[in-house]
Image (tube, rainbow, N blue to C red):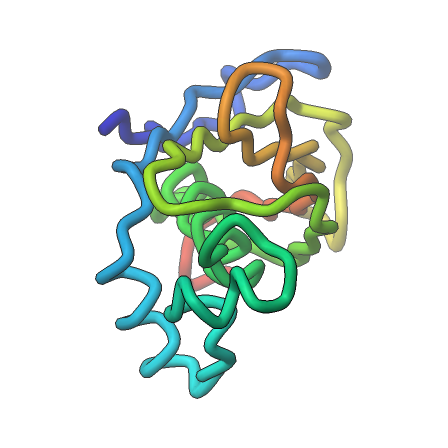
Length: 148
């Protein structure tokens, strides 16, 4: 598993690619645990026979689990250097057990907000190069914790 490193505002440039976060393969146990933790007990996520009965090849991951992966990525990039001021995601494809999700980002723009340096990030979660399962944006506000 690759872990994203914390961003420092002075090193950011518009268009720059950010360090990646690579998650371990999605497991069936993870899907069951997520279902129980989230309260989303739809058998599409935990029961292969049910998933097949509705025309799927087998169970699929919760979309919100993948959003959680992207959220983890953004928070790791922010570290203690920044505050996540905005975060959104759109779903693009299903994730199945065994898929390795890689979270990627680029700096879309740098700007100031309320006197603070800020960065808008473009985000992608992929199950293979060029095969996104989701994309989104985040805004990081940089500065000391006590100033927020």
